[in-house]
Length: 223
Length: 223
DNA sequence: TAGATTGTTAATCGATTAACAATC
DNA sequence: TAGATTGTTAATCGATTAACAATC
Image (cartoon, rainbow over all chains, first blue to last red; front, side, top):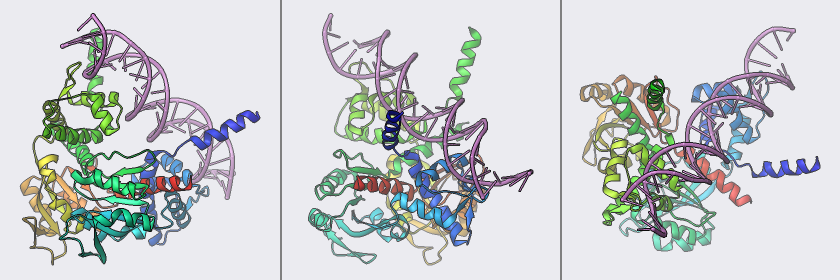
């Protein structure tokens, strides 16, 4: 009996967070923030599911991960649920990040104030290899030469690097980010990065998304 | 016996394409194109898997969907596999698309020539509600007033709409795209779109991606 | 031939959905 | 109380991985 309990507790630690839940929770959060702005106090899992096209039972499981608890017959307190999800995602405190690449996508990312307000990261420096862009300012952030990347990463103990370069140099940039001590890479370049174990890579790949879209459209048209 | 065969053929038509395969195939494709540029003639599923961190057996299943056939002991002809995947994704001929929103993300998308060359879609017009931006040119494409969206969609029989607006107006834009006859929407706004059945929506949501990244980083740091 | 590779079938794993007791 | 909702356990579904025969 005691053996079973020990086993259970070990097992419960090993069980990892469902990947798909991590992608749904930000969606719930953004809906909840809207509700909060509208002055709504309570919301049910069923309502969230209905609005976002997710099964209510799925919503409940996802919410359970965050530790939030609802009240039968009334649902969840909106403010409380927001807090719990933010905590769970690590968006309750803002993490500094370096961005590499001052091209179109890079500019879009820096110009986008949303991340620091709602997404838990703040882009504090931009790096670029094209000397014509170095020294310019994007949204108040100075563009620095790529040669300073590794040293500044170390000095400022930055943990998140964002790659918004052409695919051809993305691997090289990733290597430098890791050399400087980054633990997580948000990769916008359409190429697979080869990284040591333990380094977190999140690919944001337009072609993967576009592939799904165009295949479905193709099927839709031909049917 | 005959009954079984009929049943099987019906079943095989019903079986739908695994979603995850549609997201991996573009990745294989981009690697294959690189190999092709390097003059490589053959590649094995195991090699593709090794480079892209996918199980070789998974690569084979994905490739099987496209109908491509390999040669035991030699692998797949690179050029042939490229062609098969492009056909499968519908990237063998280019589909015209309208983009709504001439902000940072919109500009990045238009500035990015890659789609028409490698991704099967070409952005032919940009629409914007801010009159100060209307009339400007982005990468040679004139920015048109949003008031013309529905009519032009109909007139040009456009099937793909790209939403790169703030979340606050995205639903309204989606409604107009659908009113104009669009069948597929590529949505860059961080909001869930409510659309009639049969309309294809592919969300490209930075916050979902960022959520996964920051949660994993949080776990990594605390362990 | 021997061995590398394909392609398929079976087994496992994880994610989603269904069912239902507990609760206010 | 009755009914809406939570939260959990069991069943189903789909995706991944393992095993292996077929082939050049």
